[in-house]
Image (cartoon, rainbow, N blue to C red; front, side):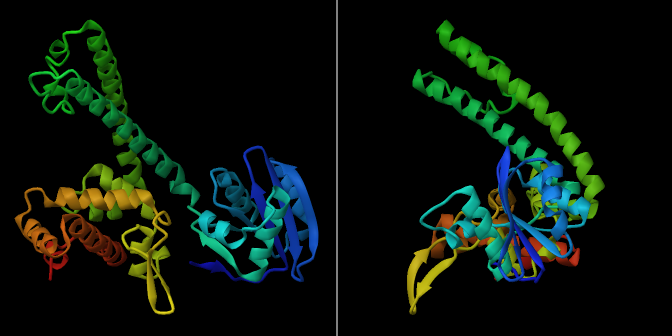
Length: 347
């Protein structure tokens, strides 16, 4: 956990919502110099902080409406920091809770050096990252429709398997296998929606790859040098990492990717693990998929998996390889070198 420890003359805590926000400004002695409920307009915010703009820092919790406030502070030359939502909840929880109290507590955390930091993703690549996440959401919706068709076939106990219907070429006589006209109509609705998703996703993926080449062509090429990492996994890793230099150590990176289990210890005793939801879920998915795809047709990697599985079981063996791949990606991007399988599979 990292905290914001810089000293300022004024500290501004913002409890931000979609249509309103409570703003609290403290001076260096901890006295409240402004505490008001404001509409979410830039003019109202700038008018309130105008007397305190010299040596001011603004902090708010990481929730879905922080983009415009961060961009406003960047344009106005005001220091802005983003608070980690889960850590902040644990630190400033109390008996009573409302917007006024929360804004004051955020300002107090800023002043006291206990404000837990989240990464303020920069504006140039932020919209593309969100578009890529939306693409992955739509791809999962398409997968749900394919699973629904397979489940429908099982529900009605069709004599022949449907085959690999994820491929358009394997769906030629799919509707003919369902004799009931109502069931056939239901499957047809799924197929039409799947075709629409495929057309939409194809165009979206080409657009994303073209944008990524303009952002970081070298990083994308390095990530694609990993066996099994193609267009989508490479884009996910590129945009979720953004800048590898923001991780001072490889341990920080693999922790951010949810590739380690944080231990709970007290007085020399272990109490299991915690913090499973702290980190980037998209990177955890990407590294898990990359390891599985790397094993296809790769005898050397499969031998390593079998060796690890004999000691730890298959599930943990895959997790170990995902952790090792995360470390490899860190040094690949840090040193600007392509993937080297011999070093990756070393004992």
